Image (cartoon, rainbow, N blue to C red):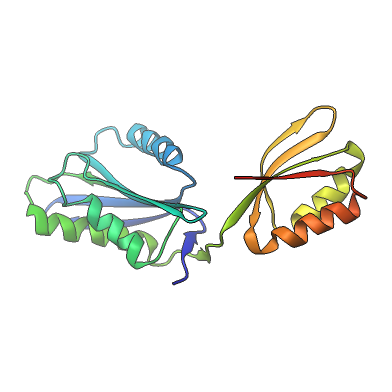
Length: 201
């Protein structure tokens, strides 16, 4: 089954018996990334009753799934948000639902519906891209190859994660597994062997 990643952040809304549920979906690269977004939302919505969320993070063959009820009854909020991600085959993404309590308790079935509906609304019109397994590489090359390397990176849609400018340029990058062999051959050929490539685990 193909899996997808969110192309950009989106929002959704649902209201029930005075309570409002504001959903925010965002691409996420790690659990730490999710935590940093959560801290930002807590600062943006300091008077919210609850900020419940769920994420699915995929790296290589491993899949990390997590959901939080954030003070709502156990099994009432986070799991319904997580199920939205699962039904839509979304990975490397998180959905937060910020609730403002309206004075009337909804019960577990009502909460399941409210949180799930808000989450669905956030992604119903989102543009998503096919998720492809990534490989991480470390490439070291002399400064004279900077222009050549930029062209190779763009052609192969490699994403630079970190770069270091020392005696040589060293870049850490991620690239689709399917493009790895072609990328390595291009670097070797165009650098005449002066570039060093290391595949990271």
